[in-house]
Amino acid sequence: MAAKTVLNYLPRKSVVHELTGTTKLVFFLLFTFASMMTYDTRVLLALLLVSVGIFRLSKIRFSEVRFMMTFTLVFLVINNLFIFLFNPDQGTALYGTRHVLFHLFWRYDLTQEQLFYMLNISLKYFVSLPIAILFISATNPSEFAASLSSIGVSYRVSYRVSYSVALALRYIPDIQRDYHAISQAQQARGIELGKKEKLLMRLKNSVNILLPLILSSLQRIDVISSAMELRGFGKDKKKRTWYMKRPMKRNDFIAIALGALLLAFSLGMIAANGGRFWNPFAQ
Image (cartoon, rainbow, N blue to C red):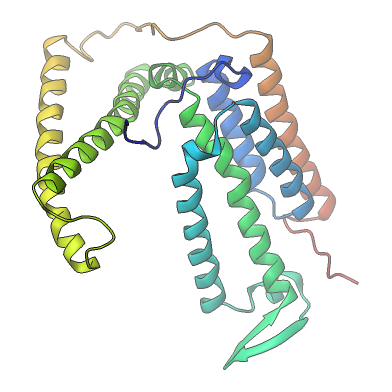
């Protein structure tokens, strides 16, 4: 069975996959701005529904992106924990009221305002994560590079950056395959890397995987750089074309309009609230 990979392109026949790379990039930026600029729970919940709906339209299964979801959830728990430890009254300072649920210890009181503030922080992650995963999983790396080049200001800079990003995205699955292959080879030689081994010993044994992985990666980088140099990469000052670049269709314009509408909705609610925060505790 092939090893599962993360952060790689997952081809599907869906409305999301049929959109051009430029459309996905523009929508991703508009949607991200809309979610990051507001702390209005109502807006975030609406954006969450849109995000989950688009994820379902992509026909990508949750099991295929479970690692990223789990990693983000763990990071979110740690982030909220440190927010509370370093400033347990941040919510009180933002909303101007203090409703204590119960006292924990020392200066730490659990308040409704702090829980509400951390809820909004969590919603931001859950709103942006599905769209961020789709941006990578539903976009061919070459088409992604073409989209970056399409919005680039300077051709020479955008072309180099776009090509570098495309190579990086193509390289991630290769690294993962090499890692699993080396790991299985080392385990076949009797080096235990499973849960039965102690943590410190597993970390020590992991060095036997990392060193060959680094060496193979350096060799691959040298081969690619030599091939690009022989082909005269970056020497031509004329504007280059992209094989994977596609013309925009009706659905592309609809997606961009939806992203612009969501951003306008977020900004409109900020103006209506008189700030980025919606305060349900106000009298």
